[in-house]
Amino acid sequence: MTRSTQARSRRAFDPVRLGPWGLLGLLGLGGVSCAAPSIDESWADHDPSNAERLDHSDWQALLDAYLITDDPSGVNLVDYSRLKANPADQQRLAGYIDYLRGLDPRQYARDVQMAYWINLYNAVTLRVVLDEYPVESIKDIHEGLIPNTGPWGDVHAMVAGQPLTLDNIEHDILRRIWQDNRIHYGVNCASISCPNLAPEAYTAENLERLLDQGARDYVNHPRGAELLDEAFGVVSSIYYWYHEDFGNSDAGVLEHLRKYAEGDLAEQLRDFDGSLDHEYDWNLNAPRTP
Image (spheres, rainbow, N blue to C red):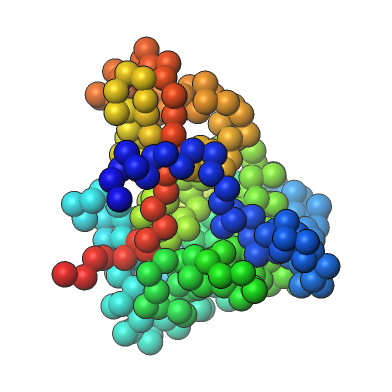
């Protein structure tokens, strides 16, 4: 399928972002008792007086060992195959997730919290894929009744006694509390079209730098935004799924892109007033085998 053909998917219905139980509701099957857990409003609590920092060194070691940052595609890839063959590092990943799950992030300062949630989301996503690897796409991994809906609505973490899904972490905690559209560049969905998995573990100290870098890297890569001529452009479906985070309009999306665009893209965007279509590649962010 050519890029121009893929681009004709604007405003297309995407059941993946609904999650399995949201889709069941649309199908009239919403009476299933396995709905995603409700979210405690207290997740917004924090302790600004606590200067303690968390230990993300195990996550950093895993990123150093298995994240490929020099692929010609410009996409950061994960060497799942090599990690799958290393039981010691699989245990390191499990231990790091257990370490985070054993903490109550509400006891820490706000920037420490945000780094905590982003790292937890990314580490859990990596483990979810690793447990089922080899797979072609994260959408192939699900516990619900509807195929190809992905793992986002399944409970994969228990924090402070509360069961959490990946959707809970991203939408009910990170997006709701911080209301920062750069969160979309921090959390990684293990797919080619997703913003890059950062090569550094998030910390209170590097949070702003990594979020800004993630935004610049994504916007200036074709999977983030590409103007095909002065009247037509293709942007990531992220800007459609989360339209409200980007000004709730195409004009708002363009304003966001202009903020981070560089070089030729910045020049193209300066006077662009055309239409935007959306596309997304759900293939796994793994090296392609010859």
